[in-house]
Image (cartoon, rainbow, N blue to C red; front, side, top):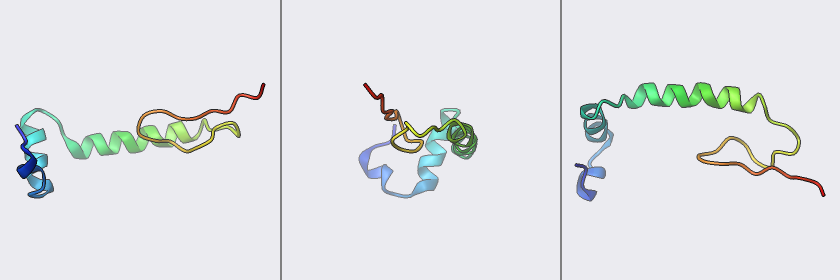
Length: 62
């Protein structure tokens, strides 16, 4: 488990902890980058912000 103290000891320890759980952070970052490129290609004028962490805003005129 990553304690608060371990979190701030550097990225390599965090990568090692994720790797032990079967997560490859470098591959995950690349996947997010590729998904972002595809998501940005769908943007329309009604989209109020770019691609973000969770959700987006879309303006509906009424």
